[in-house]
Length: 188
Ligand code: ADP
Ligand code: 5GP
Image (cartoon, rainbow, N blue to C red):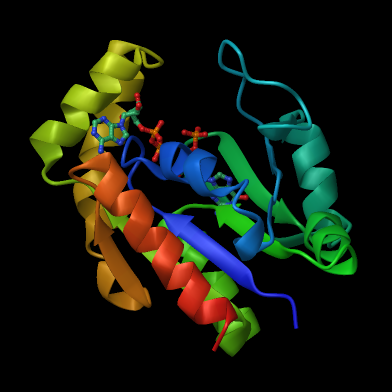
């Protein structure tokens, strides 16, 4: 049976970084589930690789067409959703789906697919460290930085809903912890 692996964290928590380190580990048989979003691409992001970048109108159409497993307005006016077609394609190819989605989306996928899902919460060492990492990443305006940091404390309260919490302090340690959790899950 194909599995769904979810990595959730406050923005800047390190999901994308950790995923990039484990995605090519063939023992895990992972394929990244590319979400649809109505936000603008960041520099270097590629349509169909990082996200399917669509308009707010196209996003509403996808909701109306029941094309999404789950969706959230993660930030005001910015929609993100997991496409049914994406999960089906990954499963048909015999891989496990790797989802980088927000905490509410994670809870919804978990309740929909139950034991097929491993939900891992990536926790930054502190809010201060999270802010520093977001500043260093250099992708945020002062406004979006504040928005992401102020949301982080709320998102951290979702940690108990996850199967596991991994603290992303030293990157290599966190990567190995996540790799091992996935290996244990898919081989159980
Ligand atoms: P997310 O995908 O959760 O928004 P990223 O993976 O983009 O987060 O990480 C945010 C920033 O923090 C990136 O610039 C990344 O290089 C950096 N980062 C991630 N993990 C660590 C870590 N353990 N130590 C130091 N910097 C980190
Ligand atoms: P970013 O704008 O930094 O790429 O992502 C912002 C937030 O949206 C992150 O927490 C990310 O995990 C979440 N996200 C990305 N894709 C999806 C999705 O398909 N569904 C949900 N619910 N959240 C998503």
